[in-house]
Amino acid sequence: MTIIERGRLRPFTGTITGADPFAEIEDGAVVVEEDTVIAFGPALEIIADNPDIPVVPVDTLLTPGLVDVHIHYPQTRIVGTFAGELLEWLETVTFPEEARFEDPDYAAEVAVEFFDRLEAVGTTDATIFCTSSPVSVDALFTEAMTRTIRVRAGLVMMDRNAPSALLTPAQDAYDQSKALIERWHGADDGRLSYMITPRFAPTSTPELLEAAGALWREHPTCGMQTHLSENSAEVEWVARLFPDAPDYLGVYERFGVLGPGAIFAHAIHLADREVGALAEHDAVVAHCPTANRFLKSGRCDVTRLLKAGVTVKLGTDIGGGTTFDIMEVAAEAEGVPRRSRPQ
Ligand code: GUN
Ligand code: ZN
Image 1 (cartoon, protein in one colour):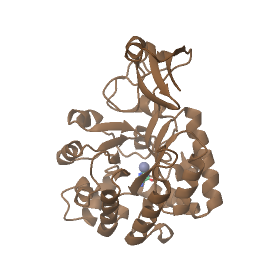
Image 2 (cartoon, protein in one colour):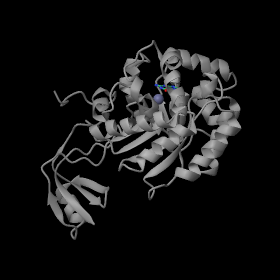
Image 3 (cartoon, helix red, strand yellow):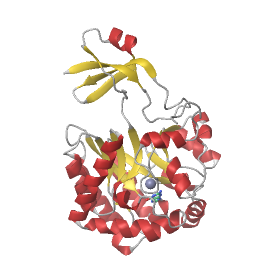
């Protein structure tokens, strides 16, 4: 069944365009087909375009969907736990917590909490990192089957520079990812989908990135996600680990991790060449301002990215980020007007 819901509409979908994310259309409408919003805009236009669809007035705020393109479900319980900047925080807080997700009961329990938190703030579409344990991925997707949110998620691939319990040799990470793609990609009529997920260059050998690139070539309908240039010490480390690469993004580029729709979280400390390459390859930057503040990573120059033609979307980056609410993230985003924020 398809209906038009008519009422006050906030058309923001999570992509930063330079417009105010909180702007509203007083007389707006969304077209809802079964559970999915298929069109939205000013009511008169929507009704004119769909004259045969029944119109239902609503007195709650309409949105086409709240989209979070970067979040780590295994970090649900460490939100707000500070331990210095990125690399120290990963080592002392994040990796020990992620190691707990070998336990299927623990993983299942946190998956429930995670979706409860997302539902409470109205998120309808989330792109998610699991841990390097396939147990964590099965737990997440199994819980997702009982919900209605669109879920895009994958196994974190890491084969160096993390505790040994979290490392998986490149070939095994490839095999495990492939098995998970076969199990979950496209499940529940396409509501669930798989993201190939090399964590970031510092925890990857060339072989691991090669495996991630191969998976994407072999499964082009899957997504790709990783982190890029979040912290200055991280960027310097990548230059030492990959001395032949022109810059950080160049590492991903060489192994086929950079491509259309690939999501790069943070992308703060970039050379002009990297900004140009992100645009040229139709990649997406996940802008995570609350995490950038919490981990003291620096300020992302979103205006520079937009001017270069890069697509920029929003991520909560739980648990580096401090809120599950993507509209709170929007309120802190760079590259959007500061007026008319809710008080
Ligand atoms: N870079 C690599 N892993 C992570 C992570 O878990 N969180 C953040 N914020 N940055 C990362
Ligand atoms: Zn992240």
